[in-house]
Length: 459
Image (cartoon, rainbow, N blue to C red; front, top):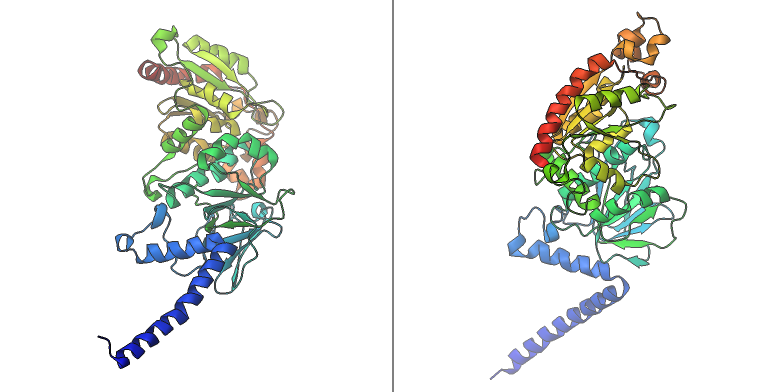
């Protein structure tokens, strides 16, 4: 039986428990009503930080990146091409001011989430986002179920097909697969996304998230605030059109990105001819990517080049991408090809739609050797294409009619250009190409051998 003294002590203990438990319970109840995402984050932080089965885990719940135990903002500005910030905990976006708010120690960070950090002239046109932490955050109006936000810019060189992928979708692929390797239930928040960009890449965006994207700064952003469980601001960038498998948690490379394109635009299966024997096709298919005249690097003797390719043995399909060409249509053309040929330019980005093992012949005008290799040659080899490069001579360039044969423009383009990239204009915009068909035939024959072998093996 309990003595009077023991009973008094017990009553005192219950009073203490009641004194603390009731206010805590009321606080959690109010928090749940006002901001469910904050309650979810509080509980998940407790559970994952203290659950023994996840102690020391790198990813924590739902394969998320390692989280700073205390909510707040951290930024990594050590990379040459990009900055990268994380908001560890509930985040409120005010699109009217391009500001992300977090609860934590008072701090303000600013970031332009576009991976061309070293180019001042490019970054001057990128919208700056503010990340601000403090004791309070604005009222949440649109909930996103506590999901993390991935924030990046569709400004800069966006609108150029190559840069749409090189600084956009390939870094997005890298970022998502690095931070969310198994659970990709995320919200994309895109700064400066034009309506045309959203329409053109709607299918590809849906391959990254099933949720509608949130847009900042396109002139039509709603005034409502948005709430997320956390946020990463900026994209991880491995280089131009590059996925470095050594830096990827799962060792992914550009071939895996091409598989994503296959799933997006090919319906998960081949869109081209499945079996060359059953189809009756006896010649490998070469897609000749044409380029409009008047914008530089036009192919002046395109008809003769096509005839030469057909004489070697190719079935030639001419492809001129236009503004209204859908990516699904472009993918169908390239996915059915055994080889592709074209003059260096943004349209060569269609190499990403070729099947690994197909052949790619790039015609390289004067002065574009470095860009041709970095933008297309390297990615082609990384994707497993049979890459062949045809560097034109000065005699094949229209610049030969304008400049003295001994001028640096013709004899030594790197010396002429130096570090002044503006001098590239003469090579990019003022130069056209007339291919030497006798010299070019040898390259066509090499590509034909590769393409025929690929066709017989893969259909």
